[in-house]
Image 1 (tube, rainbow, N blue to C red):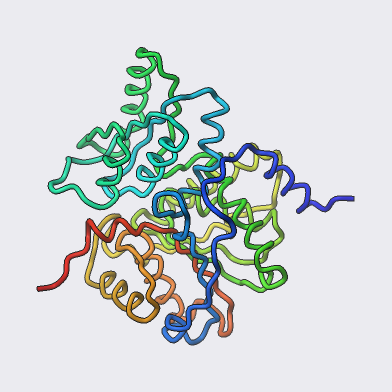
Image 2: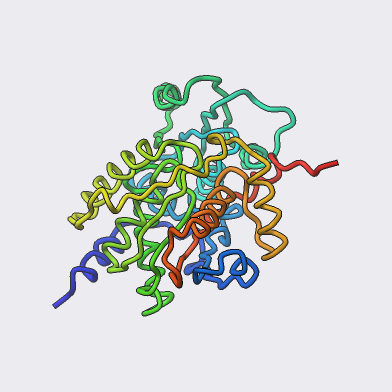
Length: 336
């Protein structure tokens, strides 16, 4: 007789998926960084190490999202993001890899010069459009673009900001099973999984996935800008939508949705000396690159929580490096 975990994994494996990277991504024991967090046993899962367009957490989401787009007979993708968006960069790359057109509704004015992720959006030949509006207006703008393109004969698939859809959640639900298979019994000894959180799909996937895979780790999201309540609300909704998609009913409570909002450094996209100093420290102690918008703040949160004593002494903590390396080249300035 199959166990609940096996049945859940079969349900997940049955979903259509396009493989954009070689799995599993590496798990490393960071000797240099370990010295900064002496009270815990630190591991890093390198989701920045992927073949598609410099990698990152959005790749896992896009494997399921783009499979759904293909199954729906779509030949164009529409999505949105901020000017430094990792999601738009990787969506553009995935769409081109599959022979699809891609239209990006970017929040803000076109900067001069263009660098980082936005430069790569143009390199992939995306139809990049700029809208200096409140973020809440972008879903309706994408719908207007969809109607425009479908009048031209294209069948369009609209992806929410950050890949925050039920299909996007499946990427990190699957990552939990990947981690279990990769580490074997050692995966059950991981007590905390820490990462940068924003739109909520990565966190929702990890919560759902750890429950389905039978892992005991607490999933701790470090907010990079939004309030904890805002993120928790979206995470809870996304967990429910993805569970319905899989036909599973895991026992998940509000205590499972942990968001720390103490390390936003002034808000989403705000780059402070605190986070750039952290970037330099991580680079020089470990040869590891984190960005100032997402992973830098996630790492700042990890180090801060360790100093606060949030993790019991001796805890095994896994930090997920969710990518974002091109952002360094649009935000970093060398001091003169």
